[in-house]
Amino acid sequence: MASLGNFDIKIWQRAVVFGVLCIAAVFYLASTASDETHLEKSPLRALVNDYEAAYLHAITSGFRILGFKPEEDGVLTIQSKAVYPARAAFLLKAYTFLKKVYADPRCDRVRTIKLYPYAYFDREDGTQGLGPFAGLVLTRSGAEEIDWSEEFPDLSPFKQALLKHGTLQFDRASVP
Image (cartoon, rainbow, N blue to C red; front, side, top):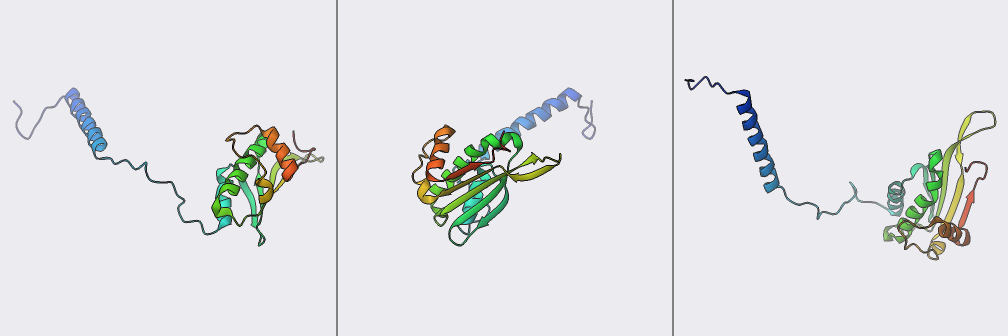
């Protein structure tokens, strides 16, 4: 017989006790946890101005920002870096970003957006350089003429709308 100070507990008994304790812990956590999904997602700090809201929209639209230059008259110039195979995604990212900015009341001061995506390209001497492969300029009045209702639009009508209500130019030498 085992004395009170010397227990002889077999390994399978220890495993059963450990399993019971784990199950009890799960039940305890499940019963005491509160649902916090009703909380609204918010940035770590409050946005100070229109341009910070536009910067946040650019980041969440997938742009890798190289340069972000707001000007006094409501013109916002953005230079972004694109991965070579992702160049075709530029119009989709631009659609998403422009839709967010021109629909957000926090960005009312932004009157014109200029987007210049940069990518690495091969030079004639065999070296690589980083340069713009496209340019997009859209004013707020031009944005009001574009149909933004599609979540993932057919990019051909969007491209035609940009050509009609804004400016869209591609460097033919660098676009695959």
